[in-house]
Image: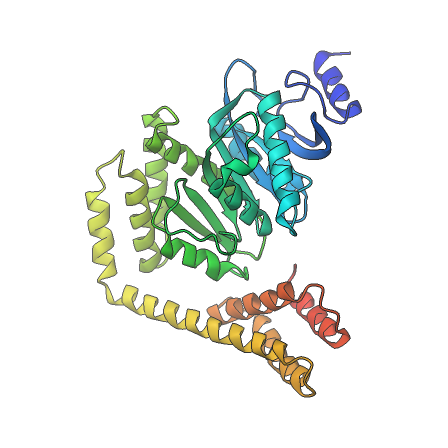
Length: 386
């Protein structure tokens, strides 16, 4: 039997409790049990070139439903390209904080005990409630401290941001946030992008409330590489910087709207300011900001936001009146209108707003036991996939 096959079988038959030397490289291992707490387990990806003679950055991923593999799958390509270990907890999920923080602590202890981890480059990632776990760990790294006392180097936040009551205008770590165009937390992430002052980037993709696409995750890992060079926790690589800069500029030039181009130029200037002369980019962005089409697009954007806020408030006000005799009838009428709006064949801000409001209603009523409401929610599910 060849050694790679033997190592794979060993990992499988021991439930993934092998040493760093035993575990296979270049493939996702679904279930690695923590040596000190076998009740805690996680999915794992080691780059194909993993060795124990150097230290490695790590991404700790948290899914809202305890499906560790989902987060690992998203970051696998970026981890392979840039040399990261990725681990996704199979225990952390939406609910009380303690189980998720216990999972984060156990996973961190196991990874740092099993592998040569770069303690200056531990990152957290998550989706929805898992993103709030990732952010909580970054804001309070003492919750995962055991024999080590790490600082979190950055957060990848998909479809959610800060835990309730924990918002900060500035944090000591960079944030790469994402949201789908039909994500009910789209507004939360756009507000985070607008409000936070410390290094961050928020990317919107076509889709709903879900983990970011693999391509965007790879872009996120690359962006964190740039942030690590900025802070000095990673050696400067001018070739990589030049390559990233050129690709970001090309991306900006290919955008369809002047508003999107202006924002991307501003983002590039902010990200590459330590490495490039970005005066020209800032000047171009300022000229675009003065254009009438950009001003008009901003007016439309603000009007859409106000409309979405009004519609959301209306739906939740009707939900509060559900037990009143006429309450359900009014809610059903308004939801039916939104369902029709969400079924439009062509994409538009109106269709996206309708889908976001409907999915927000569905997410906020999980566990509500009302047969009529459940039938209405089933109708929503038929239009806007989970």
